[in-house]
Image 1 (tube, helix red, strand yellow):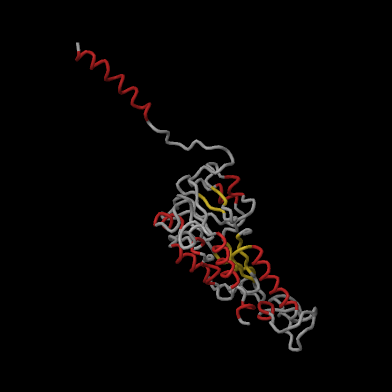
Image 2 (cartoon, chains in turn red, purple):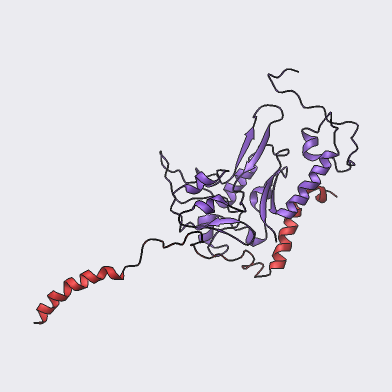
Length: 72
Length: 222
């Protein structure tokens, strides 16, 4: 009887096996970013979340492109 | 912080392709992909103009609008980036972009359309900042190191500027002022004078040894 029940259960298990599969396609919404989140550039070292310090560093680098200020 | 932008000064670009080389070197860009390139108009003709072109990180980016899987996003600094894990390589962004910025790997004889690759403003992508995964997919994240894109910082003539749009506007405005102080209406500045002007020149007063007029193009009657 147990063997008979096992034979009956086997196709049932095989049929339900596909139900556990994760979806392979992206379920996206129109017009909104669907990828992984990104962190602000000042979050990591060496600025460690200090946005003001980061902006000041970029401002300094940007002014290095102005040779009229560099040569004086 | 306003918007991060590129600005290429066509009067100064000498088509050295240093920006292209710097980009490929810094981001380890594979063969067949050019995130940045130099376009020259009237090549070989006196008065030719060159311009370095890459992703312009549009405020209303058409690539973002047409992407069927919405893998594009814009950072707080106005940099347009994308998630390569989501990209399906359809090429819609390539057709939509007016600058031809999106690139696709061409490893085979007939080309293979893989994940799209484009200029990231040296800002990496949606992976931990400075991680090997980020470098492998998107290149180096100089912005998180407090640095500007390598192409602009390597530009020898400072034709290519990168950074906060307000700062770039100030720099370029100062250049234009210097150029206006050089030459007259009859002899407009050309060549070196147009590119660099003279720091000690006073605006509105032409310098005695103003630049000669630009030579006529071959084939034109003079």
